[in-house]
Image (cartoon, rainbow, N blue to C red; front, side, top):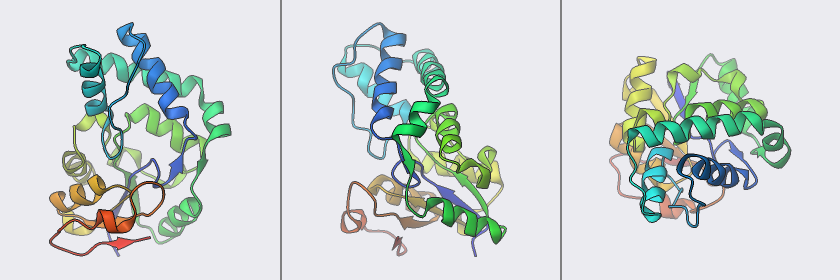
Length: 209
């Protein structure tokens, strides 16, 4: 049994019914004064990278200050529209049951997500999943740019070595990031790439659920 189980959030534990993009667009407009015409790819990415690349698509320089202001705006929008998130989105089938089953076995659980922390907290809360998670042991967009960096941050926060951790995610970036960080990976086949597209060469097998 692993000492620490780390979960991706979007399309691994939940779906937001398209509201996430709406909130993102609104935060971008608030911070830059520019209406978002195009958003950079979000699949397997982090808010920090998405912000940098979306800003570039609009001819805007993105520094740490811009990202901090964007993160603050996006977090506030999630808080303000939490009821709408609850109405339009949902926890994925079996997510709460799996979290509960691991909690009953006293397995420590947290998240590794490209979301900013405040948005992650709101989403997990409105779908009733936060009860099972130690969010201070996780890692978020504020902690780095890529999955390997975030996973290493979470391991450091939790005080756990890679060989004692498992990471569950739904994208090829989750799988390759987990392998780069030295943790075991469970590839969750929900929306997006099918399991075969996640089967990148790796030093150990992974599983699908």
